[in-house]
View 1 (cartoon, rainbow, N blue to C red):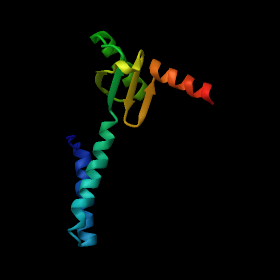
View 2 (cartoon, rainbow, N blue to C red):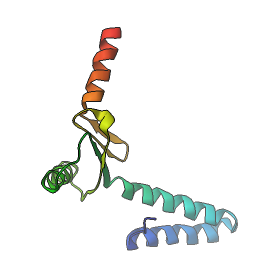
View 3 (cartoon, helix red, strand yellow):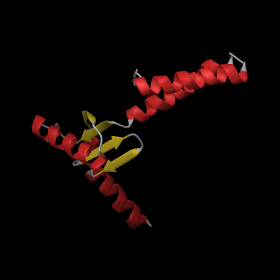
View 4 (tube, rainbow, N blue to C red):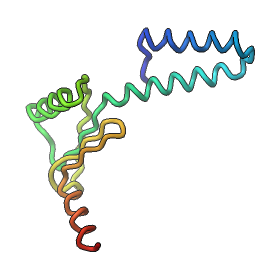
Length: 117
């Protein structure tokens, strides 16, 4: 489970305290706190890149891909590397909702769709 940064924790706690005073309904407060915590955690997940490749990558290649992603996104990236032989070649990179698919499988799928109309 992701932990909130000090600033995010302060924000969540401040909003919860405001709601307690303003709403007076303690039943809604835990739900709001859980929602805000989840939203903050989801933001953190975007810094994790899942990198699928058709073949195992060496340490040098992993470092190069991670470094390139950090430069392109302007954020620190934590990379999770997995082998997916169904890609046939290339790789698929997922960071949050962003997907970069340079796999041979995707290219063949795209060609098939364009041929079929």
